[in-house]
Image (cartoon, rainbow, N blue to C red):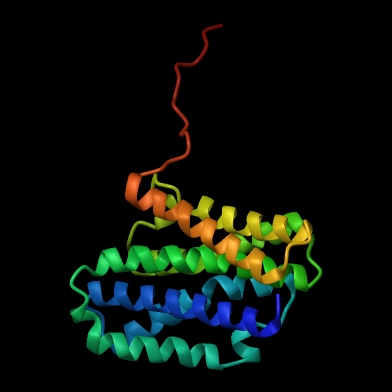
Amino acid sequence: MPAISAMALDYLGVAVFAATGALVASRKQMDLIGFALLATLTGVGGGTLRDLIIGRTLFWIADPSYLLVCLAIAFVLFFTAHLVQRRYVVLIWMDALGLAAYGVLGAHIAMVNGVGYVPAIVLGVVTATFGGMIRDVVSQEQPLILKQEIYATAALAAACIYVGATVAGTGAMVAAFAGTAVGFAVRAGAILWGWQLPRYKPRPGRDY
């Protein structure tokens, strides 16, 4: 993937997740510092864990503009979040977009740094889900990843499609677009139609 395209996808993921953090802060009626905290934790949380795992300099330390993006979004939404009447709906859909984009980006960054294909997919899922998990835990919301409808699976699909297409020799931009589109479609299906994976059903123990 061209560096400029990867950077654009990175900024998109950070911005979208930061906005979801700020929207949660608005629902919790936090002050400006609370907005900034939730936006920043959500925006850079997943990428931070990814970089720590692969031993890479934290992306927001190497380029502090990512932090400025989070803070700017927090500031804007502190004054404008009330204009979004159905904030939870907006939160869910923005989170879906960030989930798909970061699933692809996390896998891409992992592979660029010499990580194998399967671990790269795992790191794509980590990048996509960890920031939202921090957001929900800090704000005392039930983490979306623990709800019955498909969530992490969408990030997994995005990362798998990107890695698989890259291995098959598909152009990086096409692979990134395909992965993001599939990941978003999977999450959209879960939101609209309640798609779920088969769940464990308890059974009585066997008598001996």
